[in-house]
Length: 268
Image (tube, rainbow, N blue to C red; front, side, top):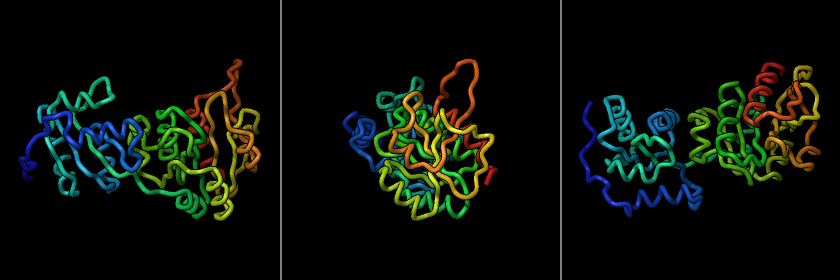
């Protein structure tokens, strides 16, 4: 295996690539996403996502990391060494990983996710107004791990491609159809077009263990405590719940997503 080509290192905080990192973190660039660390980069390469560039600290890279950088080069990404202190400066991790990549966000749409859901007669998970990126990512991870046909995040909540959401999903969101910043009207129209029922996760709903799912369903999940908006609840054909004990009123949305997805995955 040949070594990664020698190139001029990134040495200035004003380098355009570091400016691009700050733009993504500030929410000014919604076309790209940041992949920090080896695992996310490997998931992106496995999914054949479009990588713009990869920055790495030469002092932190062992043989497996160098092989990963070689893969990135072969995928036509620009691979550049970068001073460790500069990478640390644009990291939002307590322990920076010495590797950061910029990639194009996957172009998935609600129509594509719901079409996959309809074809599989499966289940799609929809994060509705969930503000914590880590929770949105964990919903995506539950969707991937529990065999859902796809995952979506509605506009007005955290993005599936937020750096913390990507870490919450551990990169698994790349493994299934996904759509981000979906408008509510678009979701309703496309669900009707594809013959996918909308169901609501709601504390006042039916015990999910008593529900038989027949056909394709998009399960709407709201924020813990606040839940779904009345408009969203009214649009749903059914409401399902996880029965709780000891006076516990609600579960974290990602936990609820996992329990409900597991209960509904084999019920079609």
